[in-house]
Image (cartoon, rainbow, N blue to C red; front, side, top):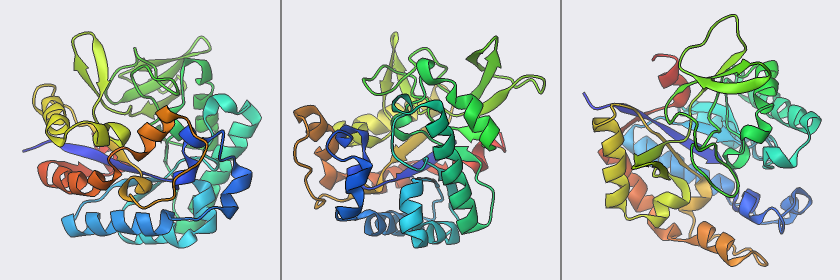
Length: 292
């Protein structure tokens, strides 16, 4: 039987992304054209056509203003998880603000769907060695798993030497370290990293976002099949609703790197996504990891 992989959607609008954080602070968000509802509906329609369920990490700011999005996702049988309340990288928040952010989002989503929110993903996968205190706050807030670590080097995120597949983050001597086993006597949280492809001595991005739009689909499929067939592991794939929207407004004042990352090949996302759903099996994160 083919391996069942994990499909995740980070529900945020085009103006929330970290690449635009300097030109699109939260105070400007209410005045911008919102496209998150129509774009999320597009994703839901595609998933429904292919009978695939996913985990939707929903930004609390979005859920508060568009509660119908959360309810529609839940009604179609997908898992609801938290993407925090404001889309701000962990390193840009003090610990108190971060605590309030993750608790506010969790409570908001739970009130909307009437069920416990177990999962969390930091904006821009921004839990790093310098911000691993976030795990303490996630545990205290009642989260059961996290999917924030990207085992590679990037200017916004990454812990390059973190294990590439599902395990635990365990606290030992005031530090959080990876482990394959969770000792009930230790502080720990389930950690499901964003999937990378190991080639030589490097971890390379292969499983979603801008990399899905940058690489030819044949390359993505080859890398993901390699993970399934050679390493016998499921991969974690991620996308955002705004990546399905080539007509979204263009943000003014961003740098050339940010512009390239954000707008590259948006028109190709939907077609590639449909091919992905036909080529691989998927389930939500929460469903998969607690059955493993």
